Length: 122
Image (tube, rainbow, N blue to C red; front, side, top):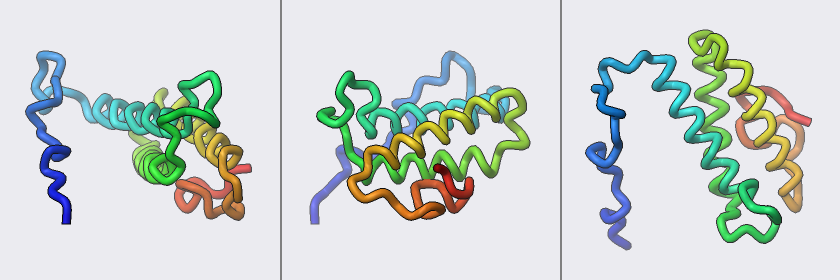
């Protein structure tokens, strides 16, 4: 077994923008987490590159995990996100569609990343 302690998360590594976490409104914490998942998912799909198919960062297995986590977060917290809910849902759906297009063998409708939370994406 390999020791992955060098990759362990250290909460001290996360800057708090000179504010304590307890002082940040929940909608901002949720939105930041969603944007991080959205950005990481796009990176893993290679969408930051001119040629996504040849991106060295492309990893569909990792993208699936990130998109599913984003879908769970956005779906479960939608009522709290107010004006942020629509753009986050749109971003999620864009990632889901990009994943389907990138897959050599697309998942059946309703079985793609996050679709158990959002319903089928075509």
